[in-house]
Length: 198
Image (cartoon, rainbow, N blue to C red):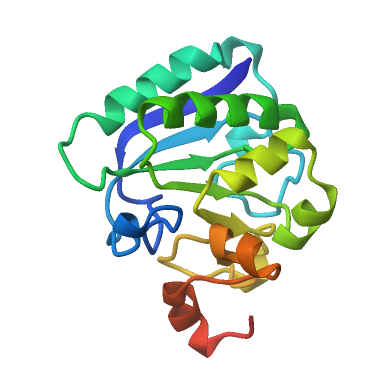
């Protein structure tokens, strides 16, 4: 039972800095286009959020999970690329308990048909919190995405022209982090943040 604010079949603004890490052949994928899915509902309500219209649950935005997955696959298939363009989940917050079941189900449905899809996800949770407290759906999501942009937006730490809104947020290599048992940020994020405290 997904509540989707919008789906963009071609989105450059919300692509990730690096390619995915679950598949070797995608590790050098440059910044490029993604299919972006904006999930409805967020309880963090960060001051200065650029997408506050997604905060409140809107029942008229309900779309069955399989229909969302079909729209995503249609967007992925528009371009004959190997590796394919990526998939971004934003919000709202796609990994909140109220959204995690649908997000996990949509990811599963997409990966059944397009297993090489690089997936990025934005959340207000810190990665370390999710590692300790994730429910089964949230665990599934973490095990099947490549990149996590974590942390709540902080207006006083706002940063322009990045895939994250404030410099307290991190771009995390999720598969490497799970493998190492510690948070591993991406190389491009490390370079971006050389002038800021991490």
